[in-house]
Image (cartoon, rainbow, N blue to C red):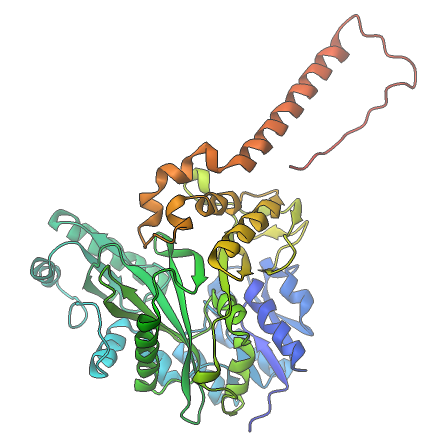
Length: 501
């Protein structure tokens, strides 16, 4: 067994704190790394020690392998947890850690490289007999090749970056006129995001469900799944709300997809925590989409219904220990849901809203968990992803979970910057969502509901209060300026009242 005594978390924000919390419970020391913009970030304060790794832009700090490994050497860290994003699926980083004698808490570099390339991942799944979405056999080099595939498969088709993720380098193409411009735009975006402009095409499955299965595997040949997560509430291919169990799922479908996910992980010799993602059509036929060789943003809802600490399992597997439970011992208890809280303005095309947090009140109570990293007075930097918090709610049923989530969102107050809280509240009030009748096109199909004033009661209440306050100040100003007003000595004192709504 490999001992892990000190873990450097090569990440920032809420996921860095999340990993450090488990390390603290396990008696493992933690090391934070931070950029210039993150000097006052909460993960820096939470860790046992923190090391500066560069300027604010990610390539000069959180993506700079040499700087991170230098911090690991100086701090004496014997393991690195990459979190998600940044270097979490970078095979070179995992190789460099091994060369330094540092345990990389994740799968092997070979698996990361194979599954990180969407084309090689598709080929590996086809060899293992896993159903995949029909697509091109390899990288599309010539535009004519893309046109030939699209004509044969039939529009719509989806162009994707081979090294992609997070919706980058993706374009939905409805007809021949859109094809060439979409290819060029996707290629440019993929090159900027991943340093690789390789593209491939897939047949687009209309109204699909995006369902993923959580996988755990150790070095002793044991692989199991921790059930599914429904991730179909998306905007521009970015997830907004996840839940488990999925409203679409039947016991039979869950068993088949779970067995397929385990088989997919075993086919590539996977170890650690990972996710097999599927698209499911209206006939409940499912197709392999991709594998994420890391911890997922939405992992807390799986933890809530299974009682398994996934970060702890990652660390134990990295130590060389076998899994301490079997597939038969795992059950889903109740229902869990996660809302991602972004610092952005939903009423202004979701424009990122960097700035200083004036006031924050997080929801509490039975079944509520918040994973965040911001605090009052904290200035949100412009350099990173705008997600500032995750709100995780559990209930004994889906109906109870939705009711509890509505209450939690009502209690969640953040001022100083715009956030997605009220937009998420509108989603909770949409009949299609409440009924569990939704797919990846939910946002587009429910624009009227999401923009309805009836579903944003709290925002309207805030506007009424603000309007009343402005009216009060204007009337007071007119009164003070009027000739009839004669203040009594010492009766009026100049006082500034700052009200936060």
